[in-house]
Image 1 (tube, protein in one colour):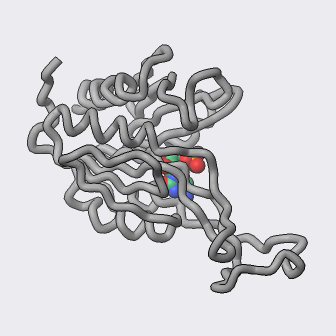
Image 2: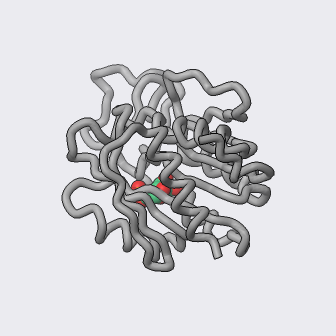
Length: 219
Ligand code: C5P
């Protein structure tokens, strides 16, 4: 339908996978394509929101009307999300942030013969946890938890530990769902204890279900 329930709202979305380079051509990353974040941006735009999409390297075109800011690694994503956070009403963290980065970076391509046998790693900042500390009561902060096996328990832990308002528990071991797919399935959970199971559907439909869920949960 032509629901304009997000008119006048600012929606900030993190999307895609981040990359942590060890030299100009090699990185630690993940298979996230950012399609879920793109769908969230489309849905929010359709519902009348002002949309900012902070995304990792992607192959799709940004919808007209969405402010898109490309980033590469977690530190850049953290910086840009921090800049836009205060003015946002709804913040959806759909990005798959690479958990670790190589300790060292070589500005020259490392020759094969001098590639290290093991790679010293450092952890990257947990962006959503940092943002949660700045959260004002009118803001809604929503995370994603991509999991295999039991998706509920780890999602509930992340909801509490990261101080989120709601979380999308997202199975990555089901066919035609998760990374790279045009479709998805999920269970939405929130801090009031509400939960809603969303059977397989397109990522755009999933995005609309999520905005329905969080607007119903607003007190
Ligand atoms: O990777 P993890 O399962 O912990 O991700 C859960 C949520 O935290 C997701 O919403 C993800 O975007 C966010 N996250 C983040 N910064 C990280 C790791 C995860 O914002 N470094």
